[in-house]
Image (cartoon, rainbow, N blue to C red; front, side, top):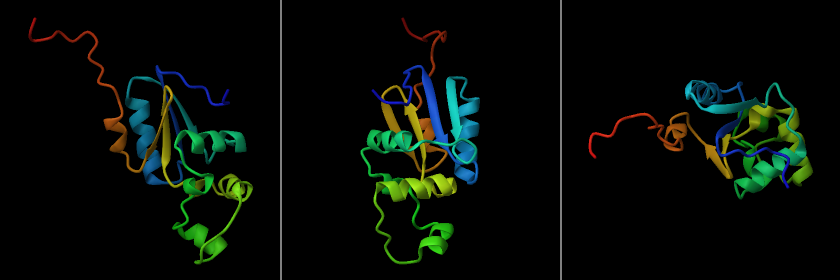
Length: 136
């Protein structure tokens, strides 16, 4: 059993408010009118277990969650390829949450990596409850 709560009626967003895409995604989720939980990783500590579960849910390695092209990463670790174990990558995310490559949305059991704010719209179920159908 994982440590991240998964509810098909709730949207959970892991994002960094230190980048514009994260801020935009947070605004989309907040205005969606759906039950949601937003986790700003620059203000809330995400545990290693949670990072591992997020990576697993996306079918990725923990290293894949880190933006190695970010100037802050290159300044700290250099321009060449960096070879860290999972614990090392977890430390990178813990010390530099702004290095999260993309925001992550969880809806039910689905883990979705969002590369832009507009990506969020395509993963939302249309809410047509209460709308009268033009045909019978």
